[in-house]
Length: 317
Image 1 (cartoon, one colour):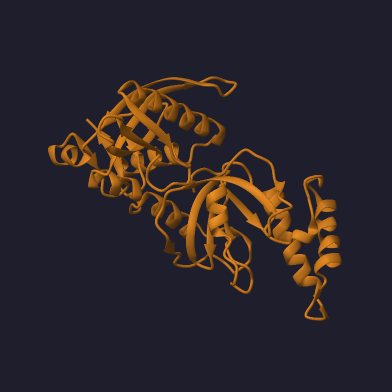
Image 2 (cartoon, rainbow, N blue to C red; image 1 turned 180 degrees about the vertical axis):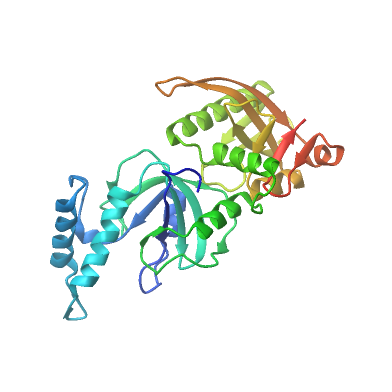
């Protein structure tokens, strides 16, 4: 696991009958969400046994009958436990895997924001997350029953998730372990608030840099796979994608995802590294020096840029 306090969760993306797919909405709005709309807003509940009992009471009242038959206490209790975990047990910094069964649709980290209820949505109970750009895959095992909320306790599956996001093999040498530590620091920072401030600062510095170069800059949605900005030369109309990486370290080595590396290798995107970002105790980010690397393919060929095979890590020498 990334650290002892991080918990991995699987969140279902389809209704029980499989007819409605909620993943596009989750992805677009950067949330995880669950159904049971008739329960109404649960935000006033306080963590503890009384909250769990209140959720059960609401389930019996609104969902106690199915197909003309009473639902069993075991089923009601199981659903109540899932809803309770969603609201109270999923914590800031936890890793969430959005999937239908074992088919992974997205992986993200939970942000420091409270549960909220969107009364206009079919799946109205929401938590904010930051989705990482990944390719879909099917989990090997250990992803549990098709509940909408499930705690992933399998260490093998946890490591599989980390490897898939980083697309590497299990590290064996000390250098590979150091690489995994770097990857975890940059993509799964222990404090998600600091990570978000670093990312926002990096985007701001990069936008200012390209505007100073006479380019128009468009910021992409955070869940857009593979790049953060789109720049356009005003005179020629030529557009380029920009992948932005922010770090509090010196920026010589960064961790990237497979989708990002694919775009960089193809020459479709530019890599901008904003290093030495400072974050104050009250979480205000400042400073940062930018290095914009174009033509990554040439850099890889010349040795200026090195991609390690076990964890897509770029070493900028």
